[in-house]
Length: 474
Image 1 (tube, rainbow, N blue to C red):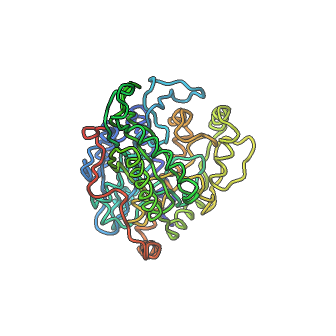
Image 2 (cartoon, rainbow, N blue to C red):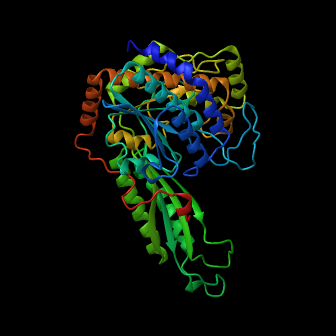
Image 3 (tube, helix red, strand yellow):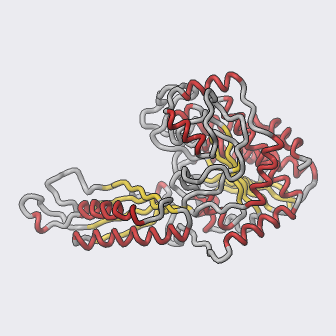
């Protein structure tokens, strides 16, 4: 802990190269498993920083890992760099103005996430080299968090097997230790096959796959009264079987995203959804085949790590924004609803403030009731490695996730300041762990106790391949 200020100075000294990296990644938004340019940019800077670099990690062409240091504990700092489709937006403008119609955009701040994590890893690398302290720091550049579940495939491949502790962060409206609550999930395609026929002349000879999809959706909707209140089920028809209404559709596909608070709950709910699909096929005399696309486990918390990270946050304090940052944030807030702003505070159990554009506090440990949460593949890592994650304040309070407003703020000075702040906390937390092995042992004991009696089941089965572009036939 006594070395915190020194490593924070190192982060500041190195930050500009990583701000530049973040801005470059913002300017080349690439989606799941197509992040070839973004991955190459990360690998290049890792090499320039002196890391030992491995590409094609776990057989994923856009996954990259950089390692530095010798012997001692292994601390992993996790990064991401994938974007979202349909969110192209001009930077710094508080009005919707796409750069490319229908293009991609960094609507979850992953341009900042990967760059900030690598900045933290680079600062730890420099400290280890200067001090002679034994330990290894790894930066994992993980693709396809947005529905691709790359970390689940990486866990399955064993790339975290020798890691002692994993650290990560995510851009947010507020700064603090992430309350480790997320939803386990599976994304599943249900392919129905029937029999085509003339819908007017011989409808009795047809068996409609689209009817089966619609009946499945009705059945799942009736399930909602009889499942845990924290569970979520979403679906989209990805293949309706054609555009001709006078043809009985011989094929149809619906994609389901099933979410639950815990892995056991998820597995039970997925089994029930599959039974509904089988019932729909039986009613329509069609057949159905299910295909898991991706899956994330729920986050497993770790009290010693969360308390350690929070102690670093208390020493450093919140990120420092200036009047220009605040004025810009308030411009963006004019495009939000009051509900957006209230939800932003509510997610962290905070009382809304009037006339506040940017974060000026560290939110308390265990803040929020866990109702306003989604899914993350960091959850899968947390089942096999003690993991801690922070939220870094990088955008205006009230900014909706996955929105053009979030994309527009991704290169602003406030985003860079929040990224640097998060890098400082991750770096000092990593250094504390390497310097004091007892902290690592405490984290491992907590992890073991939490999972006692609950075996890990990767929500991505062994026979499921990652949906790489060349393999994606959907």
